[in-house]
Image (cartoon, rainbow, N blue to C red):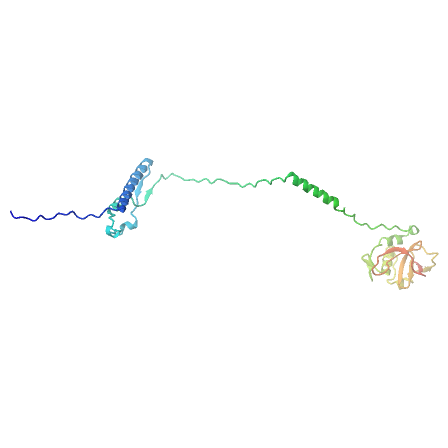
Length: 261
């Protein structure tokens, strides 16, 4: 019997198993288990779980095992392909969702009361300020000027005394301001006697009388000035700029007394 050389039988060389292969197998098992649990939950709750269309990347040609680090991923991909995709959850049409937002109201805390010591100190300081602050002086009141006893009953003098304190104003003929002849003209006009405007003209407006015979309400004239006699060697006149109408003694050396009316 001829001798035959026995052909050598060799097993096809297998790729060594790596840690990455183990990881793929464990991932596939976990995904299968998750799929079975999802179906169980959906059946218990009455919800329908449907598989949506596979993602767009599922239609792309898969890479061979040799193109991903030399690892055969066909088994993992085939098992995971049934679980990959968006699951659609449907609920009854009458189901409603509501969200109640709590109403929040901000309340400012009350101010803390000041310590008793601080209040006592502020009170004592207020009392000190009141004690050291001088009281406001009462408003000045112009003293009333009485009509001289010698002029009692003279309407002219009584009217003239009302304007004491009115300032001298050159050419003035009103209570806003008088000059000497403007003052006498204004006063006599109120008793029905019209006098000329200037003092020189008023010199001849009546009858000249002696000083001994002069009476309250007569004119007192001197060159450049005119006044109203108030009796008792007194006169009412508007003196000069910077002064006011006043009751004062007759200062002229030799005045002329003129009676009107």
